[in-house]
Image (cartoon, rainbow, N blue to C red):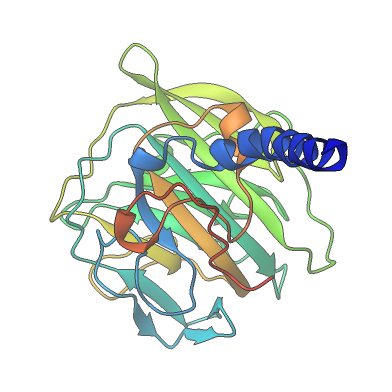
Length: 255
């Protein structure tokens, strides 16, 4: 009897330790409006059409972009996006100053975008790209990347602070600093696209290139907190495809 009691207690203890980590992955899950695992071209939340490849390639659970080869997802049908978080896991194949993006939220009808841009202003640094630099400064603690091919988790949050954006960058969960800049903008259903490779587009053309393997990308229509950013892990989330919440732990991508 004692052995059984000890066993039950041990199981309960393990569950108590693991539940917070699982729940942390669910932070703002209701505001996850775009989620790409790149096992296929689909958005796991069902808010975007399948990815259109313009020379880019889906291979082994990654999106591979190269100079002249990019991709985008159109026909957004989700809720309006004003506050936002861009998050992507990316490893560079070329560290040349190519000024492309590992993830862009663009408005189709006008020049209005936010993006995780490679080395547009400073060599070997990720930065917040935007139309006419309206939402762009260099992060105070920006990291100069080493040419080691490391998979980097980069996120940028855009928080409404008195009708102005507070923009914060994170590299592998480390806060790179914030700045206030730019009036609030909205990306509504029917007038938004997600882009990888190009910085932004006008139809099927646009500036910037990127040579990289992208493992996963997410767009939230809320500014995640630092704790929430640090809780995110590559390929895991306790949410099922097409936005159906579940109480079980989902590991949807290969380890």
